Image (tube, rainbow, N blue to C red; front, top):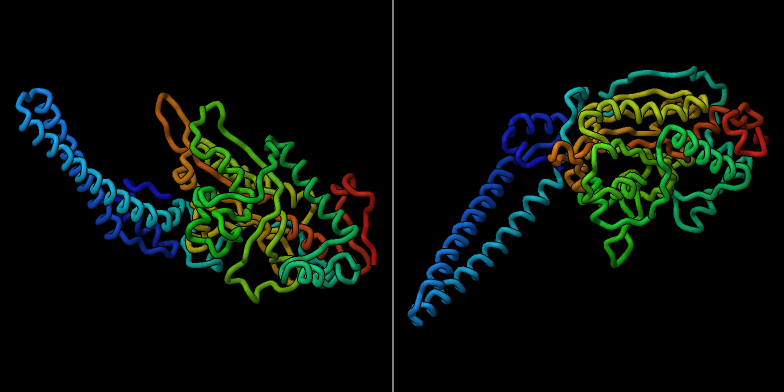
Length: 416
């Protein structure tokens, strides 16, 4: 959530930054609601003063009739204050709901652009000249290691069943990724796969993206879209000491997304599923350190692909392609030979204090309390890593397993 005071004090600059990411700020609504709120607070404070005067008069009064009149006046003021409180709650709720719909301000270093075509490629790694052009789903079906039909039978489309050595390879990737991150100071967590609406509001998925979530009926509970939600919410409403920062967390969870608006996209293979597994990286840091933290969390995610020797490119997102809560994002895109293109496998984002304001996460320094900065990144999406590995390591007869995974498996190849 953006700071209301900053919006009002720097309305032109804020409006310009938001427009660069395609959002038109309704400053008139914000100003009007803020003024209404201010007027009601002033009226309430004036009535409180009037009641204090009546209370003083009541203590000094000796005439019974006069005291009865003072009591009647006091009761009338109480009724007026209660009415003002009700009006104030409605205005504050309206203003707050509006602020929840406003995306984060892009960082000053973000390239300005309209969509993903304006993103900036920072770096490419390794040679993409892979002989295989077969799609991973086709390869895996020929090996009888994957069943899309069983996924549909059990649930619906965009669910899948992995079998045999492929399921083992999927598990090995999870173990390898977690080991890589915990060796670099990230603390592993096991978190709930269901969260409440307050948690999702805190990290920015609600209210704007409810259609992308799976909601449990007759409740305010949802299946998590990413481990970012439970991990970050661990520190909701907490005041941290400087010595506790930075906080580095990782977790392996399934992720559940309805993929609203994506029907017809990526219908082949396991690129876009309603349920997939991911290793999440989350950092909570001092504001002075968040820019460097973004570089660090991105480098940490890249280590996985470096060790797997998969070709990838690093991309900086332009203002028009930023996620709702992000002020700056790097995407890591892995190579898919069958598509002759790079596909996103990780997004690493600095949210500044955007999530911290929603979650009320602060740190205390020199007797002052300020909001922390939060970051997250995928380290990595397991299914997409698996799919890219299959395509890049298939030699026409077998899938060769990268050497870093050998200690997690009792096989080194998967043969036709």
